[in-house]
Image 1 (cartoon, rainbow, N blue to C red):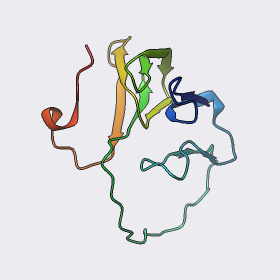
Image 2: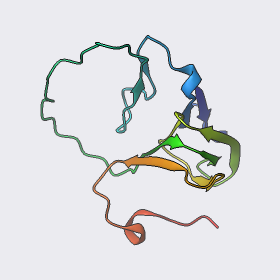
Image 3: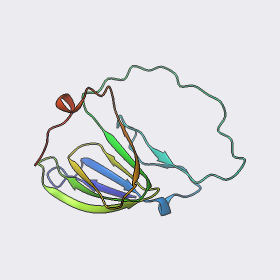
Length: 136
């Protein structure tokens, strides 16, 4: 797992990248418990069962949008920015990889035709005009 911290505030976790090959049989939490967007990964084997359950309602209030991209097929290039819009690093993500942004900016460029992604973010999503500030 790659954890990308701010250079402005070195204690501020901005982005997490987890590669498919890093997933093990032990549950790995990808997000600190203090973040609104939670993610985990685990390699599971045939006949493993996650028992039926539901989640207890809890009041959750946030004013920040956090986002995750899961690459299902193909490749993307992710650029990851600090809280002052300074480019920190670039990573290529392949099938099975995930990118989580808690803070800071990001840009994604598709590198292969027919790339498939899932995108998740805290909601509600109110459309681009109310959700995004374009950096370029």
